[in-house]
Image (cartoon, rainbow, N blue to C red; front, top):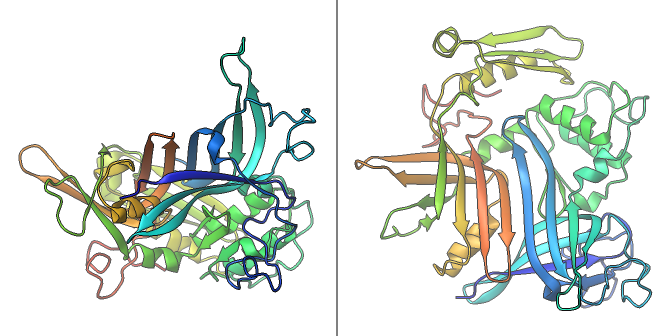
Length: 425
């Protein structure tokens, strides 16, 4: 089998759009649903031969329950000082500006055919050069990169309400309105319609990212940047359905059962971090709804949380949120915090491809054999992914968490269990 190969490309053109722009009547760049309406001519450079190391991180902060900006670090050999913006002999002279686009992806094979899998799409914050004394060692350049959250965090909504953010908009439409205000490309939006209607935008001086995250919390959905650079919004109905769709099963059994995949290591946790038994939720202008669980409080003492200034038009949805959070978080349980994968292990093409495609809100089933003959099996969401890649190694860590919405789904073997799965709203 062919082990994965890391590839890194920089697009020095202006504008936030990724991908190969659509060119009418072009055999290579005029493919509908493949090439995009770009914001400038492509100025793409493959810097893979210079790459020493790549690290990427994307996902949700478990303690803050909030998605963070995805980041990447790319370390390059630079023997000719090509990434020095003052080097007039550099082929990149006049192009080395902050926030140039960068794409990191993997090349591998599946069923003998070449395939590519996106790892990270973002923008270069800085070009940091390290110099060595003498002439026997090459200089290195470190590219510090961040995803589209950085662009949205840089745009202020100013004080007046956002134009077009009217009362009754579904959450997905409201997020689209906010992205449009920030001039974020339509080709980089992947938005669910939403389940909850929103109040009129309240105005106030905050960033577009903060305004979107308020809508995300009001819907009880998820907003993040995809590894293809797309602003992605999942509403709570979609998240509930994804929780019922187990993509892969991982185990440490030897020999490996058919249809399952191996891992290098899993990390367990059993603590009070995820317990919530006293939750207050309030929509703007509405009453405070408080949900508690007396048995949980008696066992663990108070574990409180507050969610306020949300924008649901139906302010009673705050009560539904509070009840659902307590119903799913009132008890301590052993959880799998992370799973380590070695993508250089020669298992199979399918194993490599499966590990590469693990992404946020992929549902996986993980089994760990325990001493004494017992085992632990958990069904969890992928909530974060890191890659650490050199020319000779590829290590991936998948951070996991219980589904943030444990909705009851009729006739489901995993989400349709009475007295186990909670009724969502």
